[in-house]
Image (cartoon, rainbow, N blue to C red):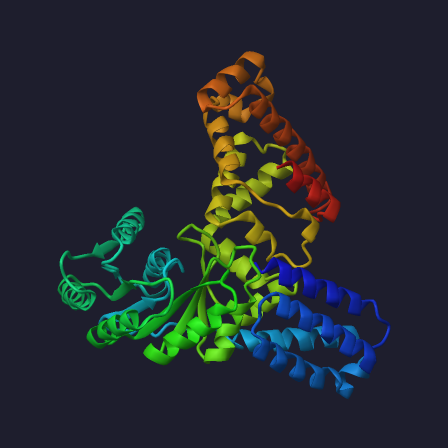
Amino acid sequence: MLNSLSDRLSEVLKKIKGWGSLTEKNIRDGLREIKLALLEADVNYKVVKEFIDGATKEAMGEKVIKSLTPAQQFTKVVHDYLVKILGEKAHDMNIKTGGISNIMLVGLQGSGKTTTAVKLAKFVLENFNKKPLLVAADIYRPAAIKQLVSLAGKNGFEVFKEDGKKPEQITGDAYKYAKDHGYGAIIVDTAGRLELDEDMMEELKRIKKVLKPDEILLVADAATGQAAVSVAEGFNRELGITGIILSRMDSDARGGAALSMSYITGKYIKFIGTGEKIEDFEKFYPDRIADRILNMGDVVSLVEKVQKEYDIEKAKKLEKKIKKDNFDLNDFLDQIKQLKKMGPLENILEMIPGMPKKLNLKVDERDLKRTEAIINSMTPEERAHYKIINGSRRKRIALGSGTTVFEVNRLLNNFQQMKKMMKKFSKNKGRMSGDMFSSLMGRN
């Protein structure tokens, strides 16, 4: 997440930690580097100016310079001002306790509205216990309707669509349908354009008039450059948006412009999309995102994700098996499945405070699928006792899984090394050193 900005700011703060004391000169030098990092990350220049002016005034104060831990105080100043430009605090959706909640998604073409609509439907159902109805109001791109129907169907949601009608008519009919069939929320996927234009805005205004939305959420691609801010201002000026959803926050793009949207428009970022899967969708917490950008981790979000996706009872049983050195390939397969539910592994690792960037871990989903296929091609006895897998068995497993003997050998070798590492970890009473972790993750 915003790796280039995170790397630069981490470097600056690491350098400051090495200073024995803070002076006006080195504070200004440090803030100058932070200013360059923010500008290079495409953070809006007005936002950068506010950030640097405020941070300079705060950092020059006696509280920082005369502190027993000046470097820590300086880091806190940077962190606090970063939180400020991100929106200061998390904001909930405006969802009615009774009746139908109407949500309208707007944005440019290609911003990720359709996928976000299904992600939001899942969030509304799980967090507000309201059955959502998705509305296909993008009548200009048949592919968009097909994508919405496909994604929604895979996740158990219904899509309301009509042929030969205008978007505002479809929206009005969808509301009547939702009312008659016991739906608690409507999520309208509107049409986008390659850029802001008058026809699009007029259409969105007509939909707004019919729907009377509780939320008008702008979906913006986090990888968009400086144009992202003017887009947000345009939608807010014409429609009065109530919040922002940043899609593709997992991209390697600079993304600073997207983070400027809240400060410039005065509208809060409410959610972020962190991957392609429907589960890769998070509520936006400015303080937690600031922690992650400054490489301080995000333990709270990590714990919440584990509690939501991970089976605690299975984890307890697994701990006992590891201590007794009974961890087998069935357990390994189960761990892969549970990790996949939690989202991209690199996203999880960046939530761990101080996780070394040098790992640069990228996990290819295809590798995980191959690993699952190999283990699934084994007999129950082979999974429980991997040492019995001889040459002929390896050939059979490779043939059954559509892989090669080399890939089967590599998996078994990696598994053997992991068992050794786990045994060492268990003897170390749960304390894993950086070298141990790097070695373990590098092999698996």
